[in-house]
Length: 305
Length: 324
Image (cartoon, rainbow over the protein chains, first blue to last red):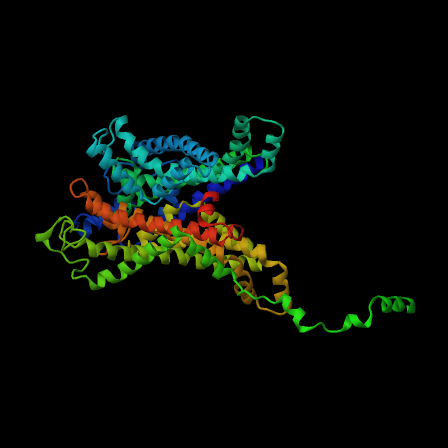
């Protein structure tokens, strides 16, 4: 077990290093530089800026300078937002994105599991038909359309919630719902399938045959076994949550990481792109790492040595 | 020895070796037409009303996106500032946008781009994945090991990063989006295809083909591929809406196609800026995307059921009820 954890940990670190290196060299291989695209500068000023940020040095030297400061947890200064370090930008924007993502996750997991279980237990009944129909409908809607519909109905027509921005808890409700709805839909579908698959297993027949009550069979045997494969998707789900929240953040004008990410890509802000990419990659890689470990602990059939 | 011969002679008499009469043979004849697998799948698919409806919607969308921009009196990038933000009317069926471009033309031109990205962006990674996965699964050994390790590492990298790097490198546009989908998607497809090749590689019919001297290419394409076509088709019907979805999302956050070229995602992004005053500018392209995604999704589901021989004798409604 210890050996496996160490192995996975080293592979994760290696992956992050690989991402950072590829990202570094590809960004530098791009035509143009960060100071050409926006303001009008003379060649002299551009050269001075390049010298100031150390961008005129040989590429390999820049790489080693960047990597050594990265090892100390320093992402450097943004080239576009003058005087602001990337660390500072991440520190101010990530909590907002994280809060939104976490709220959506906490809302969607129980709701999705509940709908999935209900749908499977009442298979072929009206509830099931309704839930299956509405999940397919939600899955067919792009995230920004869900956001717009929610804004239109609950903010503009009914006036229950503010349309956009991020100030108080009531401001977070609509974006959370918009982010959670597709998650709920996919989880409902997944849980329904898994519940029905488990329903045909022999151990469930055994549980019924030994006279266990309906409730106990469902809770301790069916749901417990059905939930396990759901955990595998969790790491990937966090990644999609990050991606999905870009859209939601834009739709509700929330000052999260998404807007900075997109702007820094368009403006060729090397240090910002690098910093945000490495940060989110680390996040996803380690989320996958933890999920893999959890998987082995929860399901004893999967032995990881 | 002669003892055995005697015994056989007693069991099998001469009458046993006389040919039977022709009339008796006809009992074994197949009178009904033979139904092969694919015609059967098609028949079952056509019985499912939902599937037919979705197919009609998809075909209608394709036809509209091909022909509307050709025959429309407006072009997708022709502006007319005197007619900006007109609501849907008899001249501009879907209204006009803020610089007076006809939305009816733009929506169908945009869905041409979106559908194109969806189809090519779904099929290309599959083709690459099939090639790589086929090589990996068929040859095995160190090639397999090398390819699978590369895929393991590649799948660890968050997909958003591929996007960003490619879009930063080649700029936004349909071409770089398709490239990004291909680079992201081939790994999963290759893994799946390799598994399938391994599953069928040592089956009897392949052993027979190899014994007869069939080349590896022939075995992969003539003997293994037909066995997994169903699976591939279902995978593709799920990959196309996923690609359209991704395109829409990326265009919405500003990393997709660049003006004056448009796509359904880009149109929705433009519409979302003004939807509080002109809701139709967002909801029309949004509805078209949703309808496309919904149709592909339901069609894929129906196709999966039709391809499953275990469900063959159930009517469509019953199949839907029992579907997992």
